[in-house]
Length: 143
Image (cartoon, rainbow, N blue to C red; front, side, top):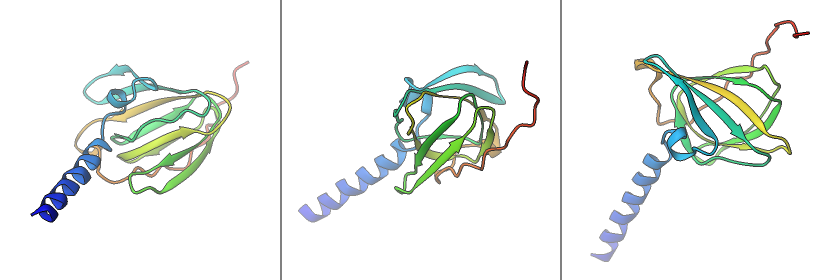
């Protein structure tokens, strides 16, 4: 009987961990994420991490990120795998829906605008996000 109860408790904990790992970034990490604008097609987030700050596990639907500062960091995914990233100010990238825990690994702050796409194809998935390689912009520098 005790073994069956222990197995039940373990199953509930595992299910809860999966549910908790896929929560809205703005709700679970308001220190780093704030809503700039929202309509029926997109939600635009302002993201700021101080030096060596990290988030909590959260999810996004399909997104486009525009980096406002140079940044280096690490994404940790629900399965424990990690992926380092390095971007330059002005880089942009598309990421499919998924869950992750971002960390700024530099001595400088990191600022990003994240555009979450809404709609049937943009619903958050239960699988980890896999960030695409940043795209360089060819826009001329402002004088």
